[in-house]
Image (cartoon, rainbow, N blue to C red):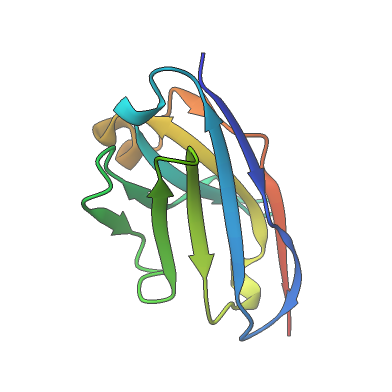
Length: 122
């Protein structure tokens, strides 16, 4: 099956930038749309962004629109989340996910990474 491993999380201050990476493996990786979700303590998992398998288009949650950018590198089998102008409310565990676009939009994925912690201080 598809394996997803996130990295790049850490502690930053408000206004800083951070880049998360998701390393993927599996022969069907490029056939899946990819997405990032996040979950803050005491809250439900939240959709952040998704990108088509072709990498031609993407969609973002209103809370991160204009600040976050998702991209994928087929040669390296990675998906990246560039996060700029970080806010304390962005603090959460960020998860990489793979699946079909309709499912990802609904919050459902076929595969999940283990998550990486992002903490933004004031």
